[in-house]
Length: 78
Image (cartoon, rainbow, N blue to C red):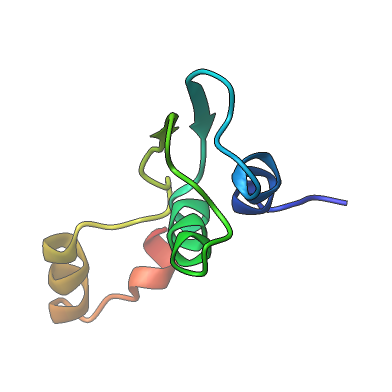
């Protein structure tokens, strides 16, 4: 069963900070989930480097606005 990366990060860091530096690669939605878990004291960011990237399906706001203004459907572009 697939699991959200933020859940794995929580399991790794919830009780104590990892020994040494740890790098994690998370999708942007997983980073947002990890931040929420951090606020709930379920993720520690000490000694953790988060690496993320832009989702392939995102559009720049100017491009989105231009598509809508031209009468297009931005959901079909992605």
